[in-house]
Amino acid sequence: MFLPSLLHAQITIKQNMGLRVLEEDEIRVAGNVNLEDATSSVSLDGNMSISGDLSNSANASNFIIESDANNTGSLIVDGAIIGDYTVERYVTSNTWHFLSATVDNLTTRAFYFDENPLTYIASYNEPVGTWDFISGLDESLPMGIGYKFWVAESKAPITAYMEGELKSTSLSVDLDYGGVGGNWNLIGNPFPSAVDWDDENWLTTNTTGAVYIWDSTFNNGDYRVYNGSTGDLTNGVIPMSQSFFVSATSSGSFNIPASARTHEGSNFYKSTKEKGSPFIKLQLNHQTKGNTLFIGFPDNGTAHFDFRGDAHKLYSAADVPQLFAIEDGEKLCINANKPLGNEMISIPLYIDQVENGEYSLSMSKGENLPGVQIVLKDLKTGFQQDLKKYPTYNYSASESDELQRFVIAFHQNAYGFEEEEIIDDLVGIYYANGVICITSKGVAEFESGDLHVFNLLGQEIHSQGIASVELIRIPFNSDQEYIIVKLIKNGFYIVEKIKL
Image (cartoon, rainbow, N blue to C red; front, top):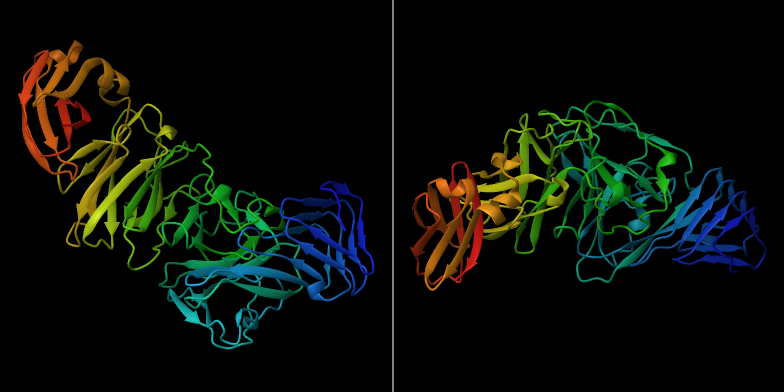
């Protein structure tokens, strides 16, 4: 049976009839939806919204919310849900998936395939901060609780089938607090749809206000984090059958509101949409591994930990380098600071779990801080780089490096000059016929300074003082293809990457 994607008064699936909602379709029903008998069926790969009740007089297999590599169906019912239903969960192999029960009275048997393939499921033990593997075949998996699931290597993706009653009302779960595990609680989305962290009815006052979702495709396995305005989780949407971490600040109940249900993001993960908040993003990469840090200056930011502003660091894996800031002794993956004034703010950057090799540290979303000069300082080499002009810094690292390898400095309208005025109008640096040429005019012509030359690894290969003249010619020969020239004059500086 085909129904156009528009509002219907009510729908009754009669004997020997079936309704299929395709991925690109959406059905909205102002009244009730009924499956009349055991020969009625619904296959939901798109979206269905029901203002009234949903009743299935047949078996769970007669109403299926489908899931595959491309999409997952989504169901939102405002009224009662009567009967049993089937919810599919498409799962790839050789990686962890963080999941939760979408039906009531679910057991581990839904994720057991007679050891073909071999699967593992574990719960998070908050008081001690460890994972407890579940070996029983009929262990309960309550709604609202999160788990992680693994399918053995070298196996094709599988589909798990959850059968039982669906939920259409809010759910409260208890938070553990005070253990040695960092007060992390793994919560599960109980609804047959995604939920939006931006919904005002989340009772998150006994958490830090941030949500963390594991994504095996992000940074080659990392947590996407979102604090209500900033992060790598698409619009703050938590997919269906997805578990997520929150960090408790006290014990008590955690409410998962039915009002937060949304059809947005019905697939498990999609790319991030920038909301224009005053944060930059720093991306650390080493080989195939990565890690992310957000730093910003929101209007309500402070120099201390801010609810729905800062976010604690949650390490992804023991062999992945971790990038973070520290505030009040707490490691952060989102660092919200007080708004920028005229003073320069310098923020130390820390990198943990470093192994020998080549790294890159890149800045994006610099347009979120217009008129702000952003400078990266390498404390090991002494090199400084303007990230607005050169957003990627490549460097060598070793296990013996200090944890605090970098400092990032922010300055509004730095040194009284607009950034473009410094670069385009006052000083020019270029290379020709074996000579570095520096031209100065205006106030820059009457200031002496210092010249530093670096290779692309950040190693200084030349330095000297600079006189206060209009044109300076410095003979320079090197086997480098590119050099970085940094000129400092009376407190301001510019950096130019030059091809020899």
